[in-house]
Length: 262
Image (tube, rainbow, N blue to C red):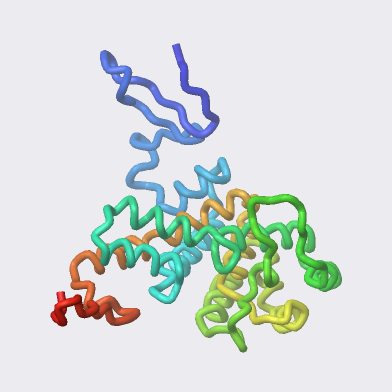
Protein backbone atom coordinates (compact mmCIF):
# COMPACT_ATOMS: atom_id res chain seq x y z
CA UNK A 1 0.00 0.00 0.00
CA UNK A 2 1.41 3.37 -1.02
CA UNK A 3 1.96 5.82 1.85
CA UNK A 4 3.97 8.52 0.03
CA UNK A 5 1.91 10.95 -2.06
CA UNK A 6 3.59 13.43 -4.38
CA UNK A 7 2.95 14.48 -7.97
CA UNK A 8 6.69 14.84 -8.52
CA UNK A 9 8.00 11.41 -7.65
CA UNK A 10 6.75 7.83 -7.67
CA UNK A 11 8.67 4.81 -6.43
CA UNK A 12 8.25 1.04 -6.54
CA UNK A 13 10.00 -0.70 -3.67
CA UNK A 14 12.62 -3.38 -4.09
CA UNK A 15 11.23 -6.85 -3.34
CA UNK A 16 11.90 -7.62 0.29
CA UNK A 17 13.21 -4.11 1.07
CA UNK A 18 10.56 -1.40 1.51
CA UNK A 19 13.29 1.16 2.30
CA UNK A 20 14.87 1.05 -1.19
CA UNK A 21 13.33 1.95 -4.54
CA UNK A 22 13.44 -0.51 -7.42
CA UNK A 23 11.97 1.99 -9.89
CA UNK A 24 11.88 5.77 -9.44
CA UNK A 25 9.83 7.95 -11.76
CA UNK A 26 10.02 11.74 -11.96
CA UNK A 27 6.79 13.19 -13.38
CA UNK A 28 6.21 9.78 -14.98
CA UNK A 29 9.69 9.32 -16.47
CA UNK A 30 11.80 6.36 -15.31
CA UNK A 31 14.86 8.17 -13.95
CA UNK A 32 17.30 5.25 -13.90
CA UNK A 33 15.79 3.19 -16.70
CA UNK A 34 15.05 5.94 -19.26
CA UNK A 35 16.54 9.29 -18.32
CA UNK A 36 19.99 8.32 -17.09
CA UNK A 37 22.47 8.65 -19.94
CA UNK A 38 19.97 10.55 -22.07
CA UNK A 39 18.84 13.59 -20.08
CA UNK A 40 20.95 16.59 -19.11
CA UNK A 41 21.12 18.33 -15.74
CA UNK A 42 18.95 21.12 -17.12
CA UNK A 43 16.35 18.58 -18.29
CA UNK A 44 16.08 17.13 -14.80
CA UNK A 45 15.90 20.56 -13.16
CA UNK A 46 13.15 21.74 -15.48
CA UNK A 47 11.23 18.50 -15.08
CA UNK A 48 11.35 18.80 -11.29
CA UNK A 49 10.35 22.46 -11.15
CA UNK A 50 8.03 22.86 -14.15
CA UNK A 51 6.53 19.39 -14.25
CA UNK A 52 7.32 18.69 -17.90
CA UNK A 53 10.24 18.13 -20.25
CA UNK A 54 11.82 21.33 -21.50
CA UNK A 55 11.81 22.20 -25.16
CA UNK A 56 15.21 22.44 -26.83
CA UNK A 57 15.13 26.23 -26.48
CA UNK A 58 14.11 26.06 -22.82
CA UNK A 59 16.89 23.59 -22.07
CA UNK A 60 19.44 25.79 -23.81
CA UNK A 61 18.30 28.85 -21.88
CA UNK A 62 18.43 27.03 -18.56
CA UNK A 63 21.88 25.60 -19.34
CA UNK A 64 23.23 29.05 -20.16
CA UNK A 65 21.61 30.60 -17.08
CA UNK A 66 23.15 27.89 -14.91
CA UNK A 67 26.62 28.68 -16.26
CA UNK A 68 26.12 32.41 -15.64
CA UNK A 69 24.99 31.86 -12.04
CA UNK A 70 27.22 28.92 -11.05
CA UNK A 71 29.85 31.06 -9.35
CA UNK A 72 28.88 34.56 -8.19
CA UNK A 73 32.54 35.02 -7.20
CA UNK A 74 34.23 35.97 -3.93
CA UNK A 75 32.89 39.55 -4.05
CA UNK A 76 29.38 38.14 -3.61
CA UNK A 77 28.23 38.07 0.00
CA UNK A 78 26.92 34.50 -0.18
CA UNK A 79 30.23 33.15 -1.50
CA UNK A 80 32.12 35.25 1.05
CA UNK A 81 30.03 33.63 3.79
CA UNK A 82 30.89 30.14 2.55
CA UNK A 83 34.56 31.09 2.36
CA UNK A 84 34.49 32.31 5.96
CA UNK A 85 33.09 28.94 6.95
CA UNK A 86 35.79 27.16 4.99
CA UNK A 87 38.69 29.16 6.40
CA UNK A 88 37.30 28.65 9.90
CA UNK A 89 37.11 24.88 9.48
CA UNK A 90 33.32 24.63 9.49
CA UNK A 91 31.69 21.45 8.14
CA UNK A 92 30.64 21.46 4.50
CA UNK A 93 26.95 21.66 5.37
CA UNK A 94 27.59 24.74 7.51
CA UNK A 95 29.44 26.47 4.65
CA UNK A 96 26.56 25.86 2.25
CA UNK A 97 23.99 26.87 4.86
CA UNK A 98 25.87 30.14 5.35
CA UNK A 99 25.82 30.75 1.60
CA UNK A 100 22.09 30.04 1.43
CA UNK A 101 21.27 32.26 4.40
CA UNK A 102 23.30 35.23 3.18
CA UNK A 103 22.22 34.71 -0.44
CA UNK A 104 18.52 34.75 0.35
CA UNK A 105 18.07 38.48 0.80
CA UNK A 106 16.91 41.56 -1.05
CA UNK A 107 20.26 42.82 -2.32
CA UNK A 108 21.30 40.46 -5.09
CA UNK A 109 19.78 37.48 -3.28
CA UNK A 110 16.94 35.13 -4.06
CA UNK A 111 14.25 37.38 -2.58
CA UNK A 112 15.21 40.02 -5.11
CA UNK A 113 14.56 37.42 -7.81
CA UNK A 114 11.08 36.84 -6.39
CA UNK A 115 10.28 40.56 -6.41
CA UNK A 116 11.71 41.08 -9.90
CA UNK A 117 9.65 38.18 -11.24
CA UNK A 118 6.58 39.68 -9.60
CA UNK A 119 7.31 42.84 -11.58
CA UNK A 120 7.50 40.81 -14.79
CA UNK A 121 4.20 39.14 -13.93
CA UNK A 122 2.52 42.51 -13.45
CA UNK A 123 4.20 44.54 -16.19
CA UNK A 124 5.11 42.01 -18.89
CA UNK A 125 6.70 43.89 -21.81
CA UNK A 126 4.82 47.15 -21.34
CA UNK A 127 7.10 50.11 -20.68
CA UNK A 128 4.19 52.22 -19.39
CA UNK A 129 3.40 49.64 -16.75
CA UNK A 130 7.06 49.41 -15.80
CA UNK A 131 7.23 53.19 -15.39
CA UNK A 132 4.26 53.10 -13.04
CA UNK A 133 5.55 50.08 -11.14
CA UNK A 134 9.06 51.47 -10.63
CA UNK A 135 7.62 54.78 -9.44
CA UNK A 136 5.59 53.12 -6.68
CA UNK A 137 6.71 53.42 -3.06
CA UNK A 138 7.94 50.14 -1.54
CA UNK A 139 5.21 48.12 0.12
CA UNK A 140 4.97 48.32 3.90
CA UNK A 141 2.60 45.37 4.22
CA UNK A 142 3.30 42.99 7.10
CA UNK A 143 6.11 40.66 6.09
CA UNK A 144 9.15 38.90 7.46
CA UNK A 145 11.15 40.87 4.87
CA UNK A 146 12.32 44.47 5.33
CA UNK A 147 11.18 47.09 2.85
CA UNK A 148 13.24 46.92 -0.34
CA UNK A 149 15.59 49.88 -0.67
CA UNK A 150 15.94 49.74 -4.46
CA UNK A 151 14.08 48.44 -7.49
CA UNK A 152 14.38 44.66 -7.71
CA UNK A 153 16.78 43.52 -10.43
CA UNK A 154 18.84 46.71 -10.48
CA UNK A 155 22.19 47.47 -8.87
CA UNK A 156 22.10 50.32 -6.32
CA UNK A 157 25.90 50.42 -6.08
CA UNK A 158 26.82 50.61 -9.78
CA UNK A 159 27.24 53.69 -11.92
CA UNK A 160 26.85 51.80 -15.20
CA UNK A 161 25.78 48.36 -16.35
CA UNK A 162 28.52 45.79 -15.72
CA UNK A 163 30.11 43.99 -18.64
CA UNK A 164 29.14 40.51 -17.36
CA UNK A 165 25.54 41.71 -17.03
CA UNK A 166 25.49 42.95 -20.63
CA UNK A 167 27.21 39.81 -21.90
CA UNK A 168 24.80 37.53 -20.04
CA UNK A 169 21.76 39.47 -21.21
CA UNK A 170 22.89 39.34 -24.84
CA UNK A 171 23.62 35.60 -24.71
CA UNK A 172 20.36 34.67 -22.98
CA UNK A 173 18.24 36.98 -25.13
CA UNK A 174 19.65 35.31 -28.24
CA UNK A 175 18.47 31.85 -27.18
CA UNK A 176 15.34 32.63 -25.17
CA UNK A 177 12.04 31.08 -26.30
CA UNK A 178 10.19 33.91 -24.53
CA UNK A 179 9.78 37.61 -25.16
CA UNK A 180 11.02 39.14 -21.92
CA UNK A 181 14.77 38.76 -22.36
CA UNK A 182 14.83 40.15 -25.93
CA UNK A 183 12.59 43.02 -24.79
CA UNK A 184 14.83 43.69 -21.79
CA UNK A 185 17.86 43.74 -24.07
CA UNK A 186 16.21 46.41 -26.21
CA UNK A 187 14.65 48.45 -23.41
CA UNK A 188 17.47 48.22 -20.86
CA UNK A 189 18.51 51.92 -21.10
CA UNK A 190 14.92 53.09 -20.66
CA UNK A 191 14.31 50.77 -17.70
CA UNK A 192 17.55 51.86 -16.06
CA UNK A 193 16.48 55.49 -16.30
CA UNK A 194 13.13 54.63 -14.72
CA UNK A 195 14.75 52.61 -11.92
CA UNK A 196 17.52 55.12 -11.31
CA UNK A 197 20.09 52.31 -11.28
CA UNK A 198 21.84 50.05 -13.80
CA UNK A 199 20.54 46.56 -14.47
CA UNK A 200 21.97 43.82 -12.22
CA UNK A 201 22.63 40.17 -13.00
CA UNK A 202 19.70 39.33 -10.73
CA UNK A 203 17.46 41.29 -13.10
CA UNK A 204 18.67 39.24 -16.06
CA UNK A 205 18.16 36.01 -14.12
CA UNK A 206 14.62 37.02 -13.17
CA UNK A 207 13.73 37.73 -16.80
CA UNK A 208 15.22 34.39 -17.85
CA UNK A 209 13.20 32.47 -15.28
CA UNK A 210 10.09 34.35 -16.34
CA UNK A 211 10.80 33.33 -19.94
CA UNK A 212 11.01 29.73 -18.69
CA UNK A 213 7.45 30.19 -17.38
CA UNK A 214 8.50 29.59 -13.77
CA UNK A 215 6.59 31.17 -10.90
CA UNK A 216 8.30 33.72 -8.63
CA UNK A 217 8.43 31.08 -5.88
CA UNK A 218 10.10 28.60 -8.22
CA UNK A 219 12.53 31.25 -9.47
CA UNK A 220 13.49 32.19 -5.92
CA UNK A 221 14.29 28.57 -5.05
CA UNK A 222 16.11 27.81 -8.31
CA UNK A 223 18.29 30.91 -7.95
CA UNK A 224 19.47 29.71 -4.54
CA UNK A 225 20.30 26.30 -5.98
CA UNK A 226 22.13 27.45 -9.10
CA UNK A 227 24.53 29.69 -7.14
CA UNK A 228 25.71 26.97 -4.74
CA UNK A 229 28.47 25.38 -6.88
CA UNK A 230 30.70 28.44 -6.65
CA UNK A 231 30.11 28.81 -2.91
CA UNK A 232 31.02 25.15 -2.42
CA UNK A 233 34.18 25.34 -4.53
CA UNK A 234 35.44 28.50 -2.80
CA UNK A 235 34.72 27.04 0.65
CA UNK A 236 36.69 23.90 -0.22
CA UNK A 237 39.60 26.00 -1.47
CA UNK A 238 39.71 27.96 1.79
CA UNK A 239 39.77 24.76 3.84
CA UNK A 240 43.15 23.96 2.30
CA UNK A 241 44.94 27.22 3.12
CA UNK A 242 46.01 29.14 6.19
CA UNK A 243 43.77 31.83 7.64
CA UNK A 244 46.69 34.20 7.06
CA UNK A 245 46.09 33.85 3.31
CA UNK A 246 42.40 34.69 3.40
CA UNK A 247 41.96 36.83 0.26
CA UNK A 248 39.87 39.64 1.75
CA UNK A 249 42.03 40.93 4.56
CA UNK A 250 45.02 39.96 6.64
CA UNK A 251 44.30 38.27 9.96
CA UNK A 252 47.08 39.40 12.26
CA UNK A 253 46.89 38.10 15.81
CA UNK A 254 47.06 40.74 18.51
CA UNK A 255 49.90 40.77 21.03
CA UNK A 256 49.06 39.13 24.32
CA UNK A 257 49.64 40.62 27.75
CA UNK A 258 53.23 39.37 27.81
CA UNK A 259 54.11 41.24 24.65
CA UNK A 260 54.37 38.06 22.57
CA UNK A 261 52.30 37.14 19.54
CA UNK A 262 50.28 34.01 20.03
